[in-house]
Length: 256
Image (cartoon, rainbow, N blue to C red):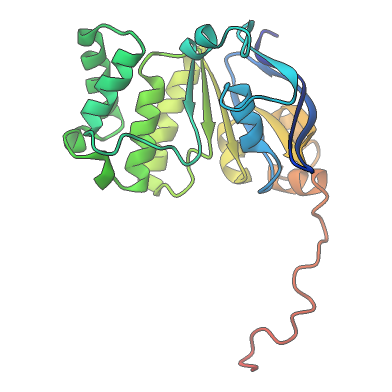
């Protein structure tokens, strides 16, 4: 199977803390891929290194056959990124932000305007296109960030917690756009710790914990005989049977 992303021996340390511990991954092209794990598993650090936002201590990353760190300009022209905690140009309107992003990508002005209008319409932002981004809600910010990431029609799209803090209506809109995008043969890689969401969206999954990959492959293969991805995930990361508060005998019941 053709790989959209190849990760080999990737390491990242922050002082004495090992965030990513020598992971290897081959992410197949044309799939909806979920990188899942508990908080602090190393998902954001991994995606930051894969997309060229954070230099690894060791290892290599190739996207569609191009080395991320040897040929960063070419690679970044072929990917779209929606990072966690995305910082936007808040004093631009949504339409101005897309126009600026498109021109930075080298797209002709008329083509930028055409694509921006379509994205704003599909993402239900047409009515707010002349509103300043500073006044956008969390869901609107996620959608305008997604629009900017899709504007140049990348081959691989990376999303870090794209549904975090997003209302159900906006989440459904984002989901529809991403499903249409992957149906065309493009690749989506997104991180999440919400197993139900990953199970409903993804056909390929990598499970990460403590900076290492615990399992990866098609969703059904990773889930194995477990009734749900949530159950399989808990077993893989060693969270089954953890103390759920048995010692908190003072909690609840009106006790003081």
